[in-house]
Image (cartoon, rainbow, N blue to C red):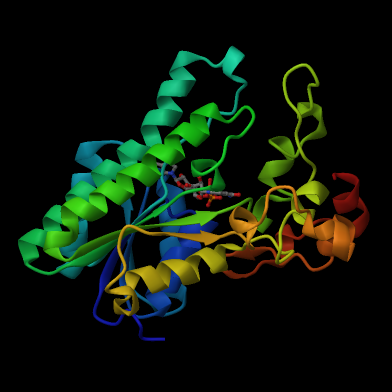
Length: 309
Ligand SMILES: NC(=O)c1ccc[n+]([C@@H]2O[C@H](COP(=O)([O-])OP(=O)(O)OC[C@H]3O[C@@H](n4cnc5c(N)ncnc54)[C@H](O)[C@@H]3O)[C@@H](O)[C@H]2O)c1
């Protein structure tokens, strides 16, 4: 508590999953938080939750890929709380498609959205920090997609890899102003195992032998050295650290929040040795909203959760 006392944060993409949890944790550590989302209701929900905890938050509807919206969000932050010390960005649009089927509009939307949001949020937040004569911390959310090749993920991997390179270079441009730029990389999140993801990469119907081979939830779990999927709270703790003065000498780095996935030898499958399996794992899944337990969204039953692997 109190690690961000006196600071003001602007968070882009702050629905109840990752962004809302980050906004909540920043506020819990003492920051005043502006919650910016292109979806008005998402921003309002997050602010209502944070205010319900007697913490300070303010909503702004803004599309992080539009310069005028980002400029407006920064102006609103200064008007509401007088300064800006922290900016967090995770905005963008994902299109999954085999490259042979990739539509140019989908490609442009995905590939442009993440690094464009990266550029605009960094540029306008940094200008306000520089004008105020103090430093700051800017954090972008990546994905393992930034670091690996992924079947049917050319648009997403290109977008997140561009955001990673952008952040490293931005760290160099802004170092002279005492502004730090870092990134956080999650792998597949626990909150998507039985919700959004079942219709995407974990859907067995996606296994088209002529085009690609995918993995099941069980395959994925077995690959994780720590044998737990990351939760939004895990990302929020890493973000709090990068936002705070505890990391004041750290810039241009990426923190993997991935249970060790990126740093293990690729052909080692830890779960083959421990016998971990997704049906057992389903019993310990902790579905959360804003980083707190959320009973309603728990998998319906062990049986149905297991059936989807
Ligand atoms: N969920 C996962 O498994 C996972 C894994 C790796 C990386 N990530 C990354 O984490 C981030 C957030 O994931 P999530 O699961 O919380 O997603 P989510 O879809 O639950 O929330 C994303 C929020 O961002 C908002 N948003 C999207 N585009 C925006 C834009 N242009 N301007 C402003 N707001 C915008 C949406 O309205 C939504 O509220 C994304 O960058 C995603 O790529 C997620």
